[in-house]
Length: 197
Ligand code: AMP
Image 1 (cartoon, rainbow, N blue to C red):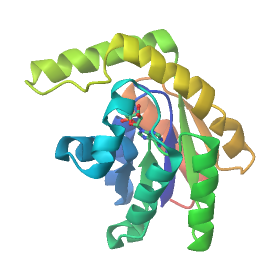
Image 2: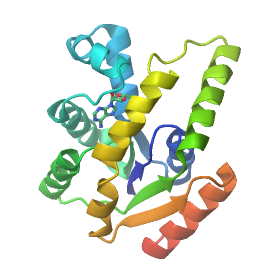
Image 3: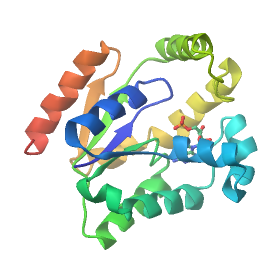
Image 4: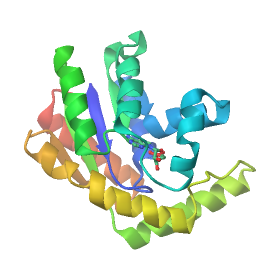
């Protein structure tokens, strides 16, 4: 099973990704997580992207495409994967198409979580207080001002992917404002219609 999860920051992609990973025994591929590991480890990529991420902007397409290419080829991805936070631009989506075509693979579905912005801001604020309550470090970009920038980038650069994937017939749009279990159930229903699961 090869899936893409689309949705703005705070849409619940992380939660649904975890559930789909368990459901289909596939691996999660989150470019945000990979980049945060690189930043924390001070690797050359980490050094390059640290400031870009901290201000809520997108890192260069080539860089994330290379990260994803490497992961798709790893043997752990043999049973499939779920992409969370990638692609984020039409250029990345085209690069992904090419990567998959070259490997004679295809996406089974692109799951888009639709949510409204006010709710998103409340969700991120909750994520910040939950993280703090657990005594964990808060993400540098989980800040109301930076969040606005991330939302704007989503609207301008990532939202057009919805049209892009509509054209392929792979798009499954779900109301992400519903309770988590309901969102999960609708994704399952949508996948059953589309793929033999
Ligand atoms: P996320 O965890 O998906 O919200 O990503 C956190 C940050 O990592 C984003 O605000 C970007 O700076 C960077 N990032 C993650 N994925 C991508 C991507 N596919 N393209 C460009 N930048 C990305």
